[in-house]
Length: 79
Image 1: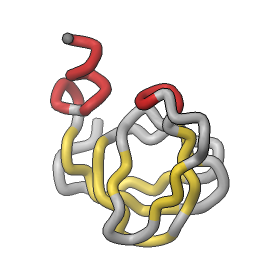
Image 2: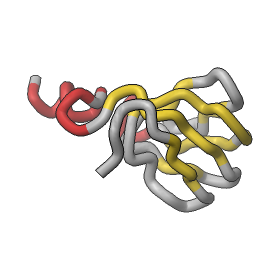
Image 3: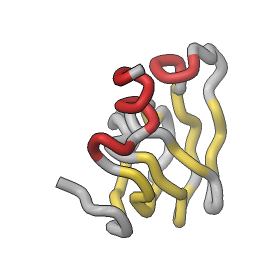
Image 4: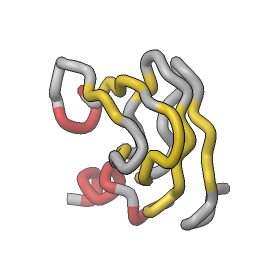
């Protein structure tokens, strides 16, 4: 399990496990599972990622901001 404040490495093709802030690297994310947006979203340091999205092509390091039941995707499912 990942705790708030920990750093997670996300490689191309992997699903983002937490909501967080990009601290290193850049990539395009497939956010269609969360937002329905069909166009990939580019993220770089300072940008935010949402758990449940897919990293398409870059290597990024993310600092966890929300984990488990607090993630955006879990809040949507609860609603």
